[in-house]
Picture 1 (tube, rainbow over the protein chains, first blue to last red):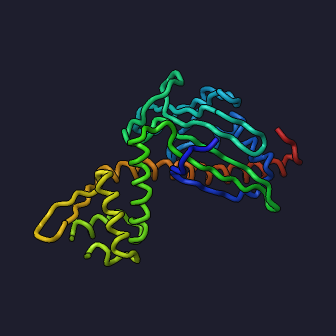
Picture 2 (picture 1 turned 90 degrees about the horizontal axis):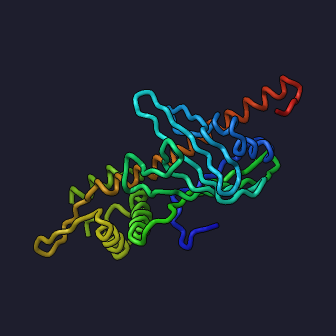
Length: 169
Length: 85
């Protein structure tokens, strides 16, 4: 499943020195995914884990000085042992969809595709993320952001430098 | 054009980028005699870049932990004589 235009937020590839079957288990078992997935400084607890198309990984995120937040993966496609596709979003206590509390620019749902391929040393794991269900305006904004992002990169990659330079003109 | 100076880009290319930024509400331009001074409106760009940056970091951090988790699991398996749970 791919979007009609390439609006990826990012793509990250890792080489893991473990057999693909082992890596697959880390993604597909509740007691394993809980142990590695999540934001820094948050304790993640699986409340629901249904590893099948249409199923949910519903989790709570507890951080020291913040109220509990919830999120979910809504699995769309599961093709063992090489591909998982899901929609990630914030959630409420009951696994309903919720908006990102910190930004209204953040899309409601993000489409994620992870693929696993075998290598001599182990597994190549690639995750690709792109916004899902964005309106045409939001997509245009995102496209403009990506093309202006390359402008910031050409200037040493720091946003503040760019800002200082442009506002000094 | 002063804006083009630090970039390894031709002026028409930079102009094109500025128009894109303006359309996205990230840059505002005014007129002063023959010039078009540009002002960066950082708030929307910062907001947008923050969530994409945060999301990327979430996954980079998670994958670091995935790697550690897989390594420690395999060390444990070796100690147990290879029992797969």
